Length: 119
Image 1 (tube, one colour):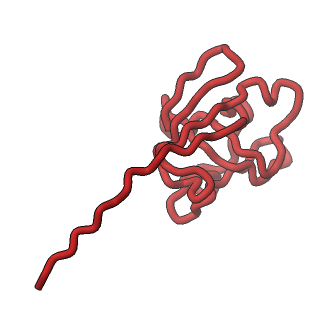
Image 2 (cartoon, helix red, strand yellow):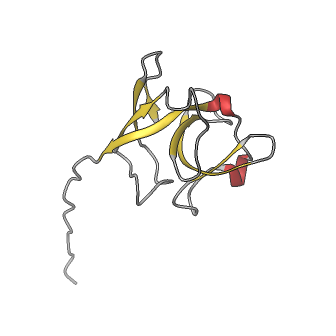
């Protein structure tokens, strides 16, 4: 996932992986509210963008799946077969959360042409 992180309350990101498919797909754009959690905690079911806990300079888009007793967040991707999430890297600390996904825009897909070979 790529994006621009600034002090402005909104940031944009572009989805690059299939971990949130079918809800979000590669090429989709996200507008993220960076101030959404200034006065409250993320709620289960909300989609967030967070700093990748294993790869510096990268971001992940995941759904909040739970909160542990130590107030660390469990996050999950929609597509479990390809998602790197709390099942692989554990709970996420609050300081890694960039913000809540406010809206998304799907890009137009290029029609695929099928070529048939004759025997």
